[in-house]
Length: 103
Image (cartoon, rainbow, N blue to C red; front, side, top):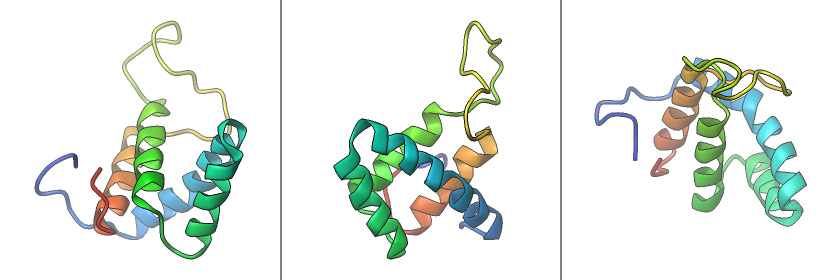
């Protein structure tokens, strides 16, 4: 489901967020399922993502949000290769929705 029925279309800032985060997602995904990550990487390089890959990316970016009201003991840690803000999550979701994915 999308964040809101009136979600604005994806723009250049959304594209930048996606281009920054997709390689991090693919790298992490490869550690868990190398075959699926390679398929997603090939799709990404061809300028598309399957519905399954889009859903995985949406779930990943949502789970990796590090700008939260939680303290270090309660929520996601900032350690890792990418800082993911709430705005980044929204950008990725908008980008996916603009490409027809149900997120």
